[in-house]
Image (cartoon, rainbow, N blue to C red; front, side, top):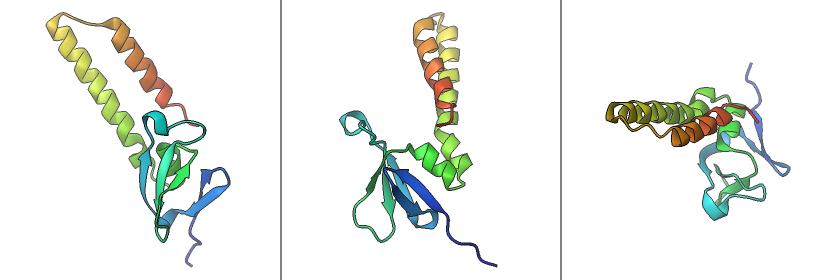
Length: 111
């Protein structure tokens, strides 16, 4: 028995079918803010929809938990690599590493 395509909330009362979303792009810098978080490309719509939800949250709602967590894992590996290199060089910047670790831990908190 086929199931109905899942509707995903993009925020601001906007929804898209999960099977029609084909690209997500986080907004950065001045583009981000006032509830603007992610560009969402939806099949059949010529311009991206601006979502108030993060790309990770949208991916999780789409059932793509592994894809949503990939940037987090990449950042954790980068942090571990920087720590190892700094320790080998005898120059560990605890302030920088602490800031990066706090940001990484904050990213693991679900919306």
